[in-house]
Amino acid sequence: MLIVISNNKGGQGKTFLATLLTLFLASNPDNEDRITCCDLDRSQRNFSDSVSKLKLPIIHNLPDKKEYNRRFWIVDTPPNIREVTDVVRQAIIDADLLVVPVILSKYSVQGVNRVAETRGAKDLRIILNDWNGTLIEKKAEEYLHNEGFDIIGKLSRNRRVSRNIESLDRWDAGLQRAQAQKIISVLAGIFKS
Image (tube, rainbow, N blue to C red):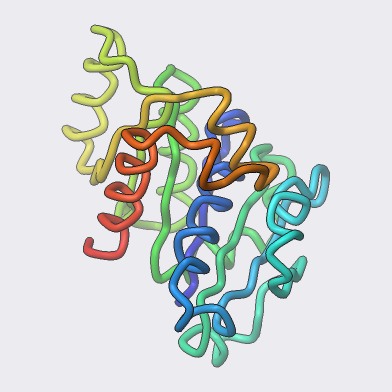
């Protein structure tokens, strides 16, 4: 299964979500030998750094298409449209599951539209990140719904939690129970949709 995390706007939580998905899948012992991390963000490689302690395979390109169904391939993409190479475009097009984290603003919504244009369809799953429920966020959420996008979850941002997850420090001890349950329910929802 090719799982691609993408948004053409930086700072939306792509690496954060890719890391969470990796941890979520790796928490099932049956998946341990079936996960490969694909870090296509050449400029930063933060995903590679985030998951290196898990001792999972990390690659910096796409696997051959015939390999897609044999493993979980979790792909983190670059934020900058100038870095969207043919490999990144192909990942967005081929994705079995395309997840777009969004911190609602004018530019992040434009990023969602760019990802949908690249894919040629609106069959992507949106997670609203750093959600506070403000009027502006609710209007942007309504716009995305009206445009036909599928919003599968909302996460309020907890800076301490995100730092701990991204560095894999104190994964169990550092998370507050309610935030952990929220994250797990959103991630579980990804695989149900």
